[in-house]
Image (cartoon, rainbow, N blue to C red; front, side):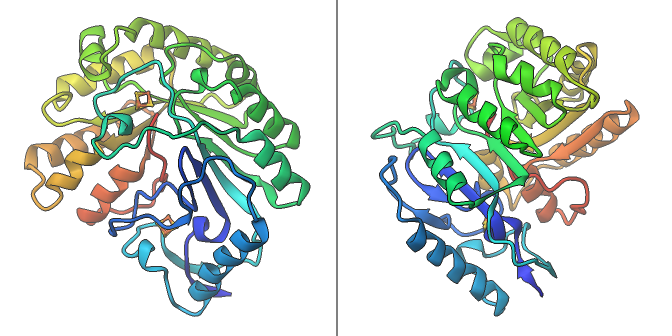
Length: 331
Ligand code: SF4
Ligand code: SF4
């Protein structure tokens, strides 16, 4: 049936350290996300009730009523949506521990509430699997804290690999190599994204507040080497941070170093708070820099993707959204 919806309304599920949502909420223009469950810290879930709530959102979409929390989201599209209601786009972000300290990290934001309690995701995943509610032909994406700081990471990853998950997307700071990532990359189903944001140790220290540039590049080299047939599964992300890494020289240095380690795909994003503050008045030099990055990346023969905030920028600027509509945020 043809109607306006988005893949996350249809089949999304995202676990955060204090709530459950359908997506990472990067595209809507409303102040509050679409919560499925607020104040969630691992308690036993009543899936019948939760799914019935999600179904109401889906049924409304079929009738042309989009939930107000999704208003203006670039991910909404009119197409023939199938009746599959299993969870196919699963995002795991239920932990915030990290061995890095990026200046743009959500954990440093004034409204960041320290998690009241840690919870384990494995029992929930197993329960969903037992109920036949997971469709493994979509994507499992990690975007919480750092995978190397999550004890359950290997268990979750190996579980999804065994189940034949089609795509596993890992966001990491790459300071420390992770065993199940090295193994997962061999399968051609796992991709790894690290926000490097620069091409030298000094700038890295300024952005990440840790002196770990060399370690990151060493890990990325290992990850590149571990790839199977598909050589585009390790990705370096550049978050444009105005006044910090906003020159053509900064970008060129990053691209040179990216290519030196053998990475063939890059991701562009913007510092989210900056774009929010400046969305009605983006300086022209930032527009020029964005255009430069896109053309330089293509000239070098690299693949490019855009993440949620970059897509917000592209929507604001009326640029087409054909190349990758990633919603993901974080590392
Ligand atoms: S906010 Fe956007 S991506 Fe998230 S569920 Fe709504 S329409 Fe989909
Ligand atoms: S690596 Fe990710 S979680 Fe860690 S500080 Fe940076 S943005 Fe935050």
